[in-house]
Image (cartoon, rainbow, N blue to C red; front, top):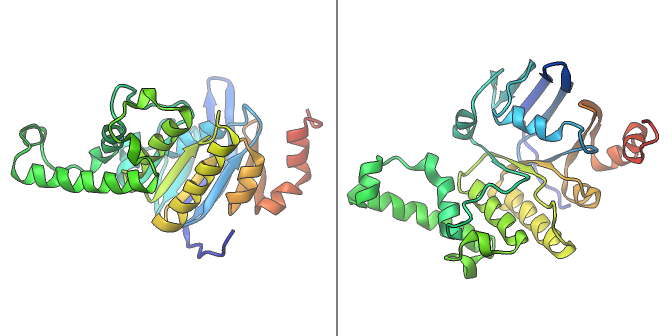
Length: 261
């Protein structure tokens, strides 16, 4: 990777534990995310990766621990509050509006930015119309950036899976996030689609300056695009460091090869 300037800590995860009844999903996990970096969370199936993202973006309330975002510490916030603070997320299972066009799906990511009331939006009158034009211009820039101009008016449900994933990324970018949480953005993709998505993730990080927290199973991709990697196994942290450090970590090797189980 090219050298880039990594900033101060933007997201600080401290001693997070999560239990569902008697089941421990996460146990005493701490790590941080620095501004402008790509921070990967990896681990075998059932390691607690998605649970960790759910704690960060307010879907789950941690049983213990705290999360600090830009110096503000909270033990629970709902998903809307987290989004308003500048954290966006894509999901492992696509949650797109399949009958709506690419343009309208990405426009839905602008909802938090819209100031006009619903009545004025419906009338497309005065300030509301001017505001919508500004939002559409921003969305068109995202469409150009993601190279999906040819599909602007196409219903998302008719697109190939790899393009639907790109639309999902576009909708998250429409929120203008400071931190972007990507939950397995390359799951189910072929090699060419993975290469395209890797390029877009790097470009989002470099051109938009967006901090990225990434869950991904493809170790080759993780090692190529990440600045730092945290490794979970059975809800516990077993490794944390640069891709090279993690690659040579004996605990990580055992977890992935299965010899420790």
